[in-house]
Length: 336
Length: 297
Image (cartoon, rainbow over all chains, first blue to last red; front, side, top):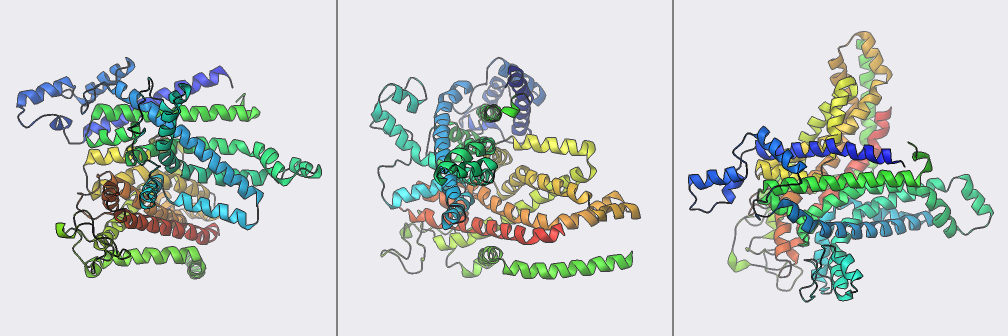
């Protein structure tokens, strides 16, 4: 993988981000509905309203507003949230680490669970074990992440599993104020295992809800790739050498089956990140997904724009990482 | 010409007959269809079978547990919610909304996506470039976030939900129909139609579209499942209908709020959503298995 490849991809991201910014900007403004209306108290006069419109730049034409918006964006200014009256960039950056940690934990769960299912299915190929893996994957996939989230909550309440928290990110009784938003990593580095345990416990259910659909997809694709790899000559060679079936599946076949799975996992990971919008809301988990729903309900235009752009940046970054890892895993792609 | 048409007509009639037999022999189609029919009947006959008014509140009858609990009240099979409304009646009326949104949204998304997909696949050239690029940009948006933004922008209500689903999900139809149209374009019957001198639009609508139809039925069924989920999501975040209206999503949202007092509020609407979605998926997959060979021939 060369630097020019990386540079080209980064440059290509600019028009995509511009497109996303433009579509969201126009979409939010061409339709009726006044964001100022929610800001003002009942006693506000016409002049107060006009004053506020001017303050937020809503009195200009849409085209001019967009030009100003782009100017601000280029200068790193994402505007001021209307409902929280705080800098959008600050708000988003404050919440972003929460979502990133949640997504990474979910990703680990998905890869672990999906990988285990795929290996089990490949090991018991053609027997009832494979059918069980296929059935489980099909069932998991049919139910979307937000329903899994709700089912988990129901499960915890009905069976009184008080040890598993269903809302928030850290226990109220844990005195831990992180210097960064990355509580999981920071608590571990600072050896605060009480805080680490509390954050991890709060993350378990949302992470599993997000991870299950992806785990099922990984299980399916990886199992199919392993099955294909198992028909190759080098597997026959390994058999002739007398290696055990478990070793052949887990070492020789798996390594060669990884490339399609990595690509697909990356693409599907963007869906996982999109899923945080609802799953965080359901578990009152304080990340950017939760914030996005509140911003939409409050018609907080600058915050919605900032959050959608943030999600777009995350998606582009994930796709870039996927392409890079693809190049690393597959030597033939390195000079593409 | 007339003779050729008669022969092809007879052969398609025969294919349809065997397709119907094959459909009934497919367990997924039968099972999915039966569950769908069950919900459809509940939706159509809701006013006749619902034991109570779904929006009638009675604070004297709050939190009655369902029939499997020993504190259950007769006449309230699945209990009542935080405002004393009968859960069974709300579920029955909820089926109306879920199915209406599913059919309308899948039809709207299907119409938009099919027209664009047919045009892109058949005409090719700049039309294909423009439409394909549009699909790519569209798919870069996070779907859930986009639907929430769209409904917030259009205002709450069923029509917004339907439009939002159509605006987001037309790409699913467009991509598949475009690819299938390109494949159909290579078939001999299209070449003969061109030789006979039929117009391009005639070939597209009267010759190619009927051959894409089995695929469309499959996509439509699967899209209905997606629409049921999206409607539940939007009413969960309170963006679909006014909250006293009985949608499954609002019932789930109410249940989440009072989950500690009354966990049963959430169970049944979640099970309804899952049952309907599983049924639609099974039906769609079963149809795909059954219709695909017909289509290929």
